[in-house]
Length: 439
Image (cartoon, rainbow, N blue to C red; front, side, top):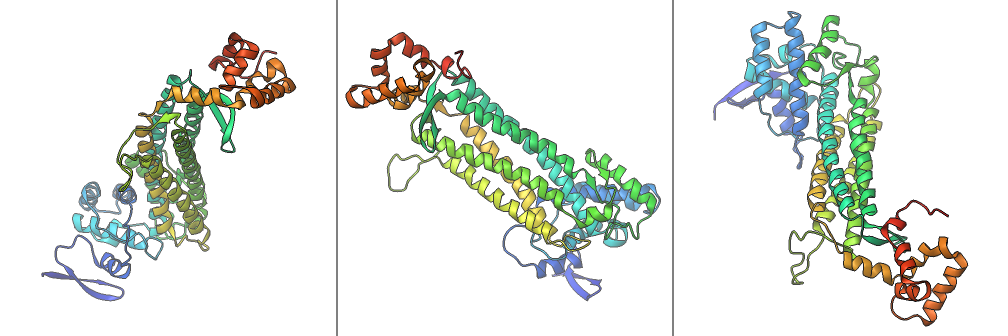
C-alpha cells in the first residue's frame, strides 16, 4: 500500500497515500477505538458551515490568500467526513482536527495554519453544536405541528362519541373521545411552541473567542466580522456572546434546551401509553402493522406506541447525560462536550422520528363507538352527571337501589326512574362537555 508521512508534535506517522484525513485524525482513530456511534452528521454539517464562515472572514481581511480561501470554501460545501467515535477526549479537538484535515486535503490547504486560522476547538465546536441544534429544533417543531394536526382531526371526528373518563386507572365521570384527543393535541401544541422558542437560548455564540473566550491570537477585526459571515452562511439569527469567556466555560444553555426535549419525551410517553390503554379497553382500534407473536396466532401488539415510548425513555436518559456533562466542565472549558453534543443531537433526531411515527400511526386510529357506549352505559359512574339535577344524596340513593335491585344497565335503570328524555339529555355529548351547568 502506498503511504505518505505526516508529522505532528509527537513525531512521524505513515498514512495511506489516498487518505482524506491527516495525522491528527489517524491518531484519534487509533486512540478512540470505542464501539458504537460516530460523530453526528448534523454536527459535521454545521462544522463545515463554521469553517466556511471563518474562511470568508479571513479572506475579506486579507489574512488568507483569495485563491486558497476559495478552495477552502468549495471544500466546505463538498467534503465527506470519515467515521470517528463520538466518545473522545479533548473537548472535541479530534473532531475539529478531522474537519480541518479533510477540508485542508480537499483544498490543498494547511489544516491548522489556513483552515483553522484564528480558531480553536473551544470556540468552533460549541458554535457548530448550536447551529446544528437550531436547525434540528426547527425541524422538530414542524414535526410536532404535524402531530398536533393529526390529533386535532381526531378530535373533530370523535367529538360526538361519549366515553368514560379514567382516574387512578378506574372509571370516572364521562367526557367525549374528542376531548381526549384534544388533550393530546394541546400537549403537542406546547411541544411545538417550546421547541420553536428554545432556539433563542442558542443564538449567542463564542466564535472568535478562540481558546478561552479572550480572543487571544485572533485579530479584533476578525472577531467582529466572523459572526456576520456565520449569519450569512447559516441564514440563522446568530450574534456574538457579550461575555465570550463565560460562553466558552459554561454549557448550561444546552441543559436548558435538553430540558425542553425532556418535556417533549414525557408527552410522547404519556400519550402513547394512554393510547395503549384506550386500545386495551376497546374504545379505539389501532392500525395493525405487524404480527405480534411467534406463538399466539393472530395476536397484534401496539408496537409503534411501544417504540415511541422507548424513544421517550432514551431522550430522558440523554437529558441526564447533557446535564452531567455540563456540570463536569472545569473553569474555562467543558471537556465533555463531545458526549453532550451527541446526546443533545440524538435526542432531537429521536424525537423527530418518534413524532413522525406517532403521527402516521395515530392518523389510522378508529373509534369503536359501540364499545364506547357499551362501557359508558354499563358504568355506575355515569350517575355523577345527574348530581346537578338531583343532588348528591338522591344520586347516592339511586345508585344503591340499582346495586340492590336493578336489572340491565345503569342507563336503563335511570330511564325507568327519571324518564328516557331526561337521561338522554343529561348524557348527551353537548351536556357532558358544556363546561359546567347553568344551575
